[in-house]
Length: 111
Image (cartoon, rainbow, N blue to C red):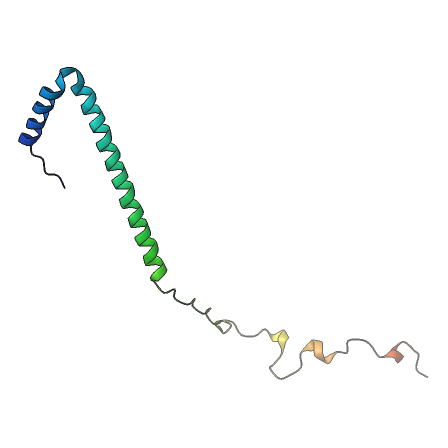
């Protein structure tokens, strides 16, 4: 923005010393330094806000991909053969051959 070399800065300081005098010059330099610091801080804050707004706008403009469907369940075959107590497929097992309750006349004596 402003391009000051060492020679230009030296000329400005000498002119300020002549115009203001040695008593007022340190106070004026201090005030100018504070103003420059505040201006830099405001410029940095403004730049940060602009970058934040640009990032926010970019995130809003991006389409959101639809969620992925869940994976289907995977069937795995058993690694060991069926236990003999389960019986042969298609054949009734031991629990199916015996009646759940004894017949009602089982406790009555037969004549």
